[in-house]
Amino acid sequence: MNRRATRLGAVATAVSVLLAVSACGRDDDDSSSGGGANPGVTDEPCPEAVDEEKGCIYLGVISDQSGVFAGVGVPFTQGQQAYWKSVNEAGGIGDYEVDVTTHVRDSKYDTELHARLFGEIKDDVAMIAQSLGTAHTHAILSDAQRESIVLAPASLSSDWIFQEGVIEAGTNYCAEAMNAVDYAVDEGATHIASIHFEGDYGDDAMVGARIAAEARGVEFTDIVTTPVDGGDTQEAAIGALLQSGADYVVLSTGPKEMATIVGGALQNQFQGRFIGSIPTWNAAVLDSPAKDAIVAAYLQATSFPVWESDSEGAQALREAVGDTPPNDWFFIAWAGSHIVKAVLEAAIDNDDLSREGITEAASELTGVDGDGMLPEGSANYAADANDRVLRSTQLNKVDPQAPSKVSVAVDAFTGPTAEGYEFEEPCYLQK
Image: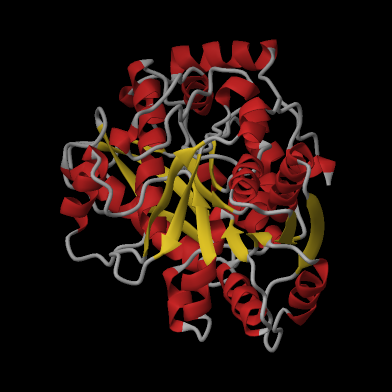
């Protein structure tokens, strides 16, 4: 798979022009959720329509609802559904409401299943509003690009800044890990360890941590681990950490593995600290025996505000969802949906809801504010990779008294490594 930048060529441009002439408005849309000039766009109302006079734009969701990252995928999907429910109740977008429920599929965090599910729904959706997992999104990327289907990954691979038709939101794992190491070194760290899953997600973060450790002149240890399975206690990873002499650890695993490693390391007298990549956090870990260790020694790296932040968007979310239990994945999904909405609105403004029209609309975006819920500089897809990439990171501490169980420990910052780094290829290719 070619993971470098891909651009639509002259043939695709010509096809886009031809389709725009014949398929730009509701009058030409097919009446089913698939087929027709604009797949996933219909004159018929959505199944749960607020206004029966409006057409429907169907978005696909391929998420983890029951696997390793179900703690991310379930609230993420709920957050997207709540966002579009709010949009539809406020009048939808143009002559349409948006459905993000009909075509939800559970990949169980299985790459091959993810690709099969994409094949099942791709003809019935205008775009994929959630593709959870880095390797999983890579498994469908070439097919999606060939058919001009825009993907919104629930993933922060550094590859996305090089890809056409991928609308990422947030600082990538590589830059995030660079900032984690810069923070750790500024706090006195002399030896960094990276404990991570093997593959595009974990390797992306590991390479970022290694680049920053080398730039800052501190020791570095690379420790690969695997997901918790049955009786797996992460003994090998914990043992390697204890032998390494590291005083700060960048974790790039799932929440269960994070809890097991942090709890086990402190139980074995580890005196250092942990900074977890954004997917390592789930408030459910506070129900585990590792709760006290996590509160004492773990920080979550992220580029998004927390649930109780005071932005206009966060306030609107809280008002819209009422008594819904606070969850930062729900929050991030709501925040990122502003970008999907901006893409669709731009395509509507261009009178072209064909897939090529949606892809073109995405490629022309120069930024989305998200009512203060998105990192500064988000969605500048018209820029080249190094102007498009986000570089800031916020560190959250675990706070059992906070609504979402995390609160801000370190405001958003960009360390010297990420600030000066030139992204020439995805970081994980440098493993």
